[in-house]
Length: 66
Image 1 (cartoon, rainbow, N blue to C red):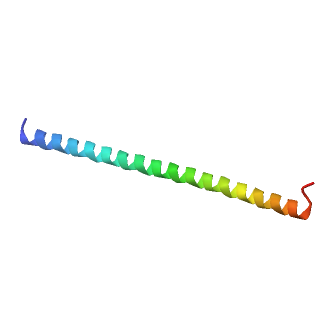
Image 2 (image 1 turned 60 degrees about the vertical axis):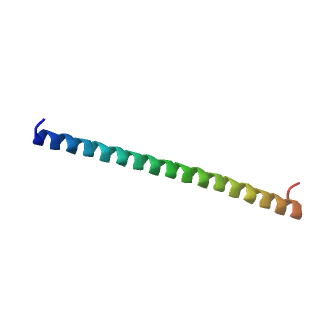
Image 3 (image 1 turned 90 degrees about the horizontal axis):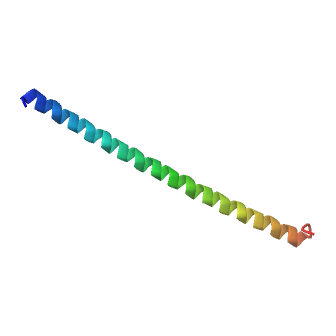
């Protein structure tokens, strides 16, 4: 293999490695976003349950829950 072929091969290797690194970073970012989404959904559900409990407590205290 002559020098230009070797340089071309090395450039292709570097490009492939850079693409793979980029793909890994995108996968990590997508995973982090999904995790954040799930955490926020869970927090929202917990908040909604607490709000319902508070509503029920007020209804019970005021006699509107009969």
